[in-house]
Image 1: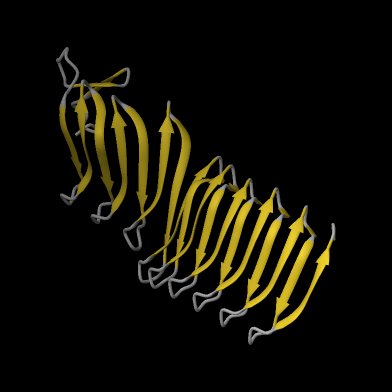
Image 2 (image 1 turned 90 degrees about the horizontal axis):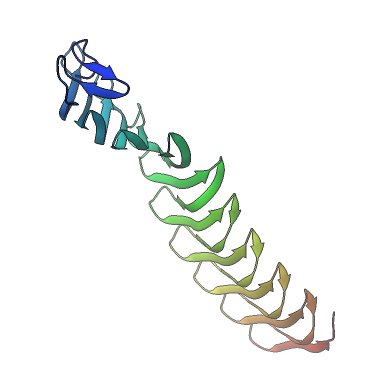
Length: 238
């Protein structure tokens, strides 16, 4: 055990007494009750591979990954439900990023979030308690980037947005809970541009409009819920 008084730490490298070569082999430390306390492996006197730590009641505390003595990541586990709740990544001894997990009472995963410098950075996924995915998107420095999708609890899509630094850019689509399309619009830099269409929940088209620089432009048409024409007209630059 590396906590034993019989082993020697020479400038961060582990040696056995009266040995000139660094220790290589398995390491196992135990509590007085016989329960494992920590387990891992040394290569050339340095921690290598997976290292695991437990409480004296057998509940896992953490898992650490090492390469040539350098800590690369550390995963933490809950004392209550025993699931992983966080993972920190390191480089040169400093934290570079983190993953956080949260769970519902039934242990179904609630969300998985990647962060960097305490801001959302990387993929984020949320789930409903029934296991159905609720949201999935990518973030850079706390701002949504790329395609972000939301779902209803029944599994049908609720919305699909394209964003650049949290600003709508590209095609944006929403759906009713029954699966029928609700709206379809196009944005450039946060402003409506091009065709915008909306439907009734029964699938019948409600309106079709055109936009230029966020102003209504060109032909527009509206329909009643039964499909009959309601009104139409033309705009120029709003």
